[in-house]
Structures are given as structure tokens and as C-alpha cells.
Length: 411
View (spheres, one colour):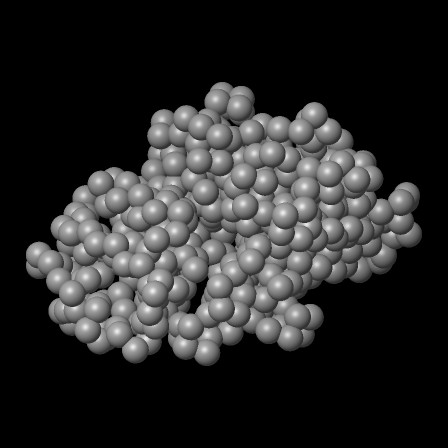
């Protein structure tokens, strides 16, 4: 069930075109004059942003590279929004940003953070686990915005780790829900050579089994040793030849070849997965439910479109700010308690209140199915039901998860 307070925040966000201040303040008792700022009652609450810089391949087809500030700019906007809301209650926030270069020790960087009890973490899964297991992180809340690995929400979950970015399992479930809804249930799967490609492919196979679709054939493609832009017409006709199928699904997270599959498949079939029709937490075409306001404010700040990790960075800091508003405190322990409470809900410009799952720390959220120019659909799709919330049809549900680090409280 959705609480009345959460329903107010959701409706307010829709009605007021994304203006966070009135939404955050509605329902707060004891405020005689809406819009009257209160002087800060104490020092600002510091939210740390810690990132591992990852070396990425040069993009093909003259595409824009992944920005170096992806995630960090989202967190920066989240800070602005949280301070704009918090000043009405005398709450202030600060953001401390640290970027660790490839090869450097991210654990030492974490140890050097002053009072790291609230840390937005943009790093690969191995780094996330290494930090979560540090003795110095025992009393911290780490908000993962960069690692989609499902294992972090499964057997490798940690009590001090919350996940704002959706898992690969959530992305795959969203896509397969759409394909099953369209009755495009026969899938030919093409997987790249990277470890993340294999994980994405496994997520698709698990989702296909879950929702009654079929992987009718699988092939692997390694673009090393040639230029796929010159050979796609011939090579992909062989790679995508197989039994009768409705779509070609591609697992190519680095974008090493997937875009060139379009119109180069053996049969005239839609392309889905990491390229083509792609599931994502956020994207440039998203504008419903006042998202256009968030998009505009981000573009004004960053000079570019908001990407999924940017949204996750914004969402992580915004969630901390909302937890502080609910706790009416910037004391880290109080904020941590509000943030991890079973009833905590927060708006995210996705049309409904979002909340963290109590069994694995994952943020429940709708997933957009994006074509470069439009939102084709939003999952969960109509007809996919759940006894708690249909958002729990995306990703590992409580009976499916091997996570045992959290309490047994359902919610």
C-alpha cells in the first residue's frame, strides 16, 4: 500500500511540474508560513561522492563518449535540490567529491574521508564489495550508483549497501516483459566478449525463463582484429543466422559492435538489449511526470543530457536529503535511520513513490524502454502483478534472492 504522505508527494510532483520544494514541505507539521526559510541549526551534513574512474574504449560511429563527470554531475544537482528543500527546515548539506584513478587504492581513499557515514559510490562491483567490507564502513550507508551487478543484490549483498542504479536483472525483466506483452517471445541472442556482456546475457536468459520467452539460438561476436563498420554487412548476416525468431537481442555493454547490428541481421528483425530498444533507468527522451523539469535543470548545470548514472547520482543525494527532512535532522545516525526505515519513500520523477527493498537494499523503480528518440514503454507493464507492488516484478523478488544480510522484515 502507498502511504498518504507518499501519495501527496507523488501527486504534488506531477501537479507542480517537478518543483521539489512544495512537495517536500507538504504534510510537514508545525510550519505556519510556507516558503519562510529557517537559519541552519548546525553544520551541514556532508555527503561523500567516491568514484573509481574506469578506462573506456573509444566509441564507434562518432558517438559521444561517456562523460568523465557522469554520476558526479547528478550528485551535484541532488545537492542543489536538497539544499533548496532543506533550508525551509534549517537543514543544510555539503558534497565532498573524490575521484580515484585506475590502479589507485580506493580503500585508502575511503579511509581518508572524514566521517564517511553517507557515501554515494560510483565504482565497479569489486570495489563496491571491498569498501562495504572495510571495518571503517561498518557504520556507513553506501549508495551504489555505478554497479548493476545482480550478485550485489543476491549472495554478495551487504547490510550497509543500498542500490540506486537498477540491476541487470531489473533491466532484463523490463525488456522481456515488453517482448512477452508484444508476443515477440522467440529471441536470438548475440553476446560480446566482455565479462559484463556475459552477465547481461545471463540476465536475459533468466528473465526469458521467468516470463515465458525463449532463447532460440545464441552466438558470440568478438569485434577484435577488425573494424566492424567495414565488415558488418557480411559478418552479422552469419552471426544472426538461426531458427525462426522475433527479435535479435544483443549484450554489448561497451558499445563495441551492437549499434552496427541494426539493419545488418540475417532476417529483418528488431534489435533489442544494450542497443536498439534498450531498458534503462533514465534517458534523454524521458519527460513525463515532470521529468522534463529535471532534464532541463540538469542540462543547465552540466551542459549535456542526463544519463542513467547521472540520474542515480541525483537520486542518491536526493534520497539522503529527503531522509533528513523526514528525520528533521542532519545528524548522520538519524538520517541513516530514516533512509533505511521500511516505510521510507521518495519521489524520483518516475510517476510513483520509490522505496528500498528491505531484503536486498535495491531501490524499487520503473524502467524505461528507450529508442534513441522516444520512450517506447515503461515497465512494469500492464498485467504483471505482485502481491506487494508490481515494481517487485522487476529484478530479484524476495524468494528469489539469496541475500541474507538484511533483516527478515518484508516491505
